[in-house]
Length: 264
Image 1 (cartoon, rainbow, N blue to C red):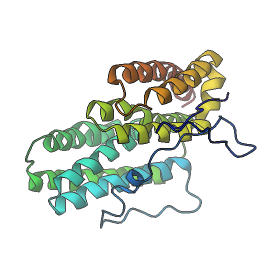
Image 2: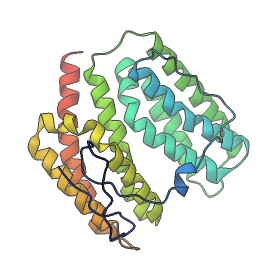
Image 3: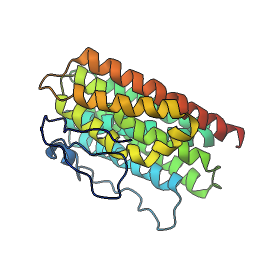
Image 4: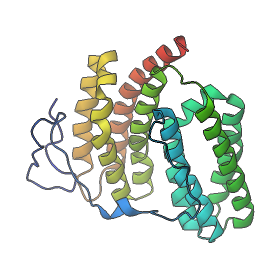
């Protein structure tokens, strides 16, 4: 279905997509913000092997912003630590289903013990960087334990990969409203663009479960893009539109998750 006629920055000219590409034209935001947090961490992430399966490579990719958090805390750079940990939290939402399925105990330690503790600490005006660094290092070690567990295990059924793909793409949309509420319009637009750009990779998973949900998401995406065009978007309006799209998206995601669990 064709959609997204104009760029969110308000250009009046439609940008044509290359021939052979589905999903309509694409809007473009500013590129500068995309380089944020690049190469901050001095802690190397495990290099993916050429033959590693999607589950493993996806989990390894989430390690990077967590390592960035550690590096920022080592530098006592609280602002950078907050940015990195926010990026980790968003990325984690995409792949946590793998860890939760493999080891509920390890999942709870990562999610409910260390992630919750670090997030709360970073909310303070002046966090205790030494204590938070210690927790972040322990959390990183637990995350590496999860990587080892998954790497050594037999593959889950392929439907779990579909669940993860849907959650990974959805993570960008989840960032839009919090960014707007924080007054960060540029981040809201950048996050929506990331969702828009990756929608084509998973739209068939939505369409296969419900053509009605698929059409509703497509329609809602046009409306979100248009609502984000003003210099000062209406936060309430954008929030309502995102929530509507999220509800349809989540309904199909829940079906895929149910299928995955039934074939575990």
